[in-house]
Length: 586
Image (cartoon, rainbow, N blue to C red; front, side):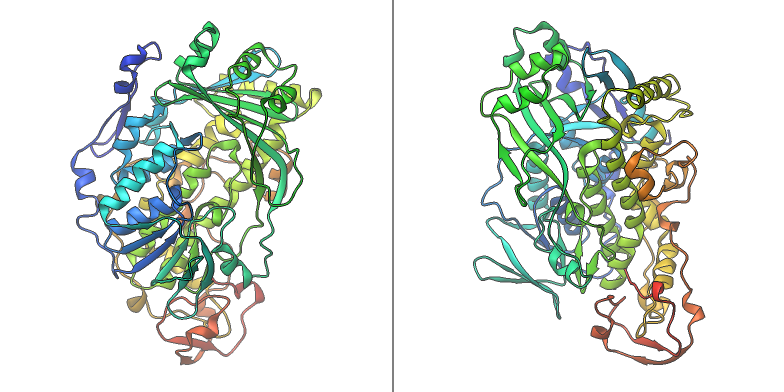
C-alpha cells in the first residue's frame, strides 16, 4: 500500500478476550486527520439545518461543521438512548468516518469481523464463507466492523458538539417551507431557518414529504412483507453453553439460511454480547406499525426445526428482549432535492438489511453532501452534483439488496439446492471472483462494488465531469442552460487533502443490472462485470445543453420549480422545447 493509505491489523480470534479490545489497531499517517480539512474550507459558509440525529444526520452535520458551515441538528427524541442493536460499518462508510476524524474512536468500541459464515438452517452445516479482516482492510483501505448503534451515535454526538454543531433534542418537525430561505416548523411552534435543510430523519421522514410532493409521490409506506426480530444476548446468558461461548468468542458473522427467512448473528461490545437478527415474513399487516415488542414465543415458533445452535441461542434470549422491526420501502424519487431542501440516507433511499449497507450508504451520502457543499458556492449546483454522484449507485444497491431476500429465503427444493451449490463454488473461487455468490454480502465482485468506492475522492477527482453531467441533464423550458462555468464552479479540493488512497471507484464498481431482473434473482455473472466507469461518470443519455438555442435570459428562480433550479444566477430560456425526458433536474 502507498504511504498515505491505512493499514488495519487484527490479531487471531484465539486472542484472549481481555486483550481483544486492544487487538483492533489502526495505524495511519497521523497528519491525515489533523490536516484533512485544514486547507479546504467551504467556498460559501452556510447555515445548515439537519433534521434527524441518526447516523446520516450526525455524520453530515459533523462534516459540514468541520468545513466551515454552521450546523443546527434537530432531533425528535427527547434524549439520546442506548437502545438498539448492532450495526455493521463497511469500508465505504469507515473511510468517511476517518475523514471526519472519528474512526479511531469508533474502533475503540467496535469489533472487526474476520469472516462471514453461511450455514444451512437445519444442521449448522457450513455452505460457504467469505474472508473479511484483515484482507478486506488491505484491499479497501478501511475496516469491516460491527458496533452497537447507541455507541456509534454517542461518538458522533460528542464529535459533532465538539466541532461546534448545535444539537437540539425534543424537536419534532411538522412542516417544511422551501420558499425563499428554507425553514422547518417544530411541534412547539418554533421556526428554524437556514440556507439549506437536510432531511436525515429516516424512512418515516417528515422532510421527504416536501421533496416528494412536487413529484406526485404518496408518502404512504410500502410494506415489503418481511420483518426482523432483533435481540441482544448478554455474554453471561451463554456461560453454560460451550458451543455458544465459542461462537461469541469468534470474530465471525454467521448467517443461517432457511426457507422463508434467515438468522444472522455476531459479537459486539468486545464479545460481551451477541447480536441476533432473524428475518421472517411479517405477521402484522397494519399500515404504519414500525417496531413492536414481541414475546419470545413468536421467535421460537418461527425457528422450530432450525439447528441446535439457533435453538440454544433462542433459549438464552432474556424475556422482554425481542423487538420486531417491520420492513418498509418507498418508491424511488426522481429528484432528491426541492428548493434548498435535500434528502440523505433512509429518508431518500431506504435500504433493506440483507447486505448490511443501510447505515453505510447513509454515511456515504453524508460524505458526498459535505463534498458537494464544499466545492461550490452555488447551493443548487451542490445539491444537483450530490444527486448525480449518488443516485445510480444507490438505485443499484437497493435493487441488489432486495434481490438477496428472494434468493436467501427460497423453500427447500431444487432452486435451493442450486443456490447452495453456487455458494460453495463461489467460496472456492472467492479471491478470483470468478463464481458469483447469490448471497451478495459474501460475493467478491459485489463487495468490490459496495466497499471499494471512495465517494469523497471520486467526487473531487471527477468534479468537472459531474458538473458537465448536471448541466446536460438540467434542461427545461426556462433553464435550457446553466450559468457560465465561472459563476458556478470553484476548484475541487486536491486529492491530497481528501484522499487516503483506497481503490478508485472505476476499478471496483460493477455494471448496473435492471431493477426488474434483480427483484427475482441475483445478478448473473454475465450481467455484473467487474469493470465500470466511476460513479462520477455514470449518466443516462440526454441532450446536451449546446443542442438548445439560447434566445434570452431571466432571473426568475421560482419558474424552475418543481424541476428545481441550478443556482440563483441568471436563467436562460430556449427557443425549442427539448425532449420530455430532459425536463427533469437533479
